[in-house]
Image (cartoon, rainbow, N blue to C red; front, side, top):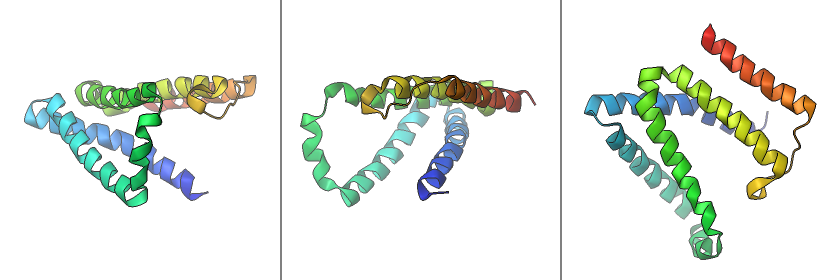
Length: 144
């Protein structure tokens, strides 16, 4: 497997860990919103260092980027707030199941239509069956 695959697997591993840890912090301090703010402050600091180390000149290109692409940050905020509030009550596994299901559906639609300059990959019957099988597998794993 390529390094990129390992990085994405680690990213997937981190999502439920993030959910559990941030949910625990939110409950401990009595505020999921404050826990989310702490998460964003830490994430911003790390991302800023990475940006400055890897390509500090990229900031100059921001004014030329389509403004609607900046809305992506709202999806991160929505995810973090939702998983921090709902995850501990629903259970991290069940909450992440629904997140994964939403990701599978959205990713297939984005790829099919090439939204946001994504590489086009049509939803064929084979791809649909694979996505359905993945969704079924996640569902079965949660029911076990």
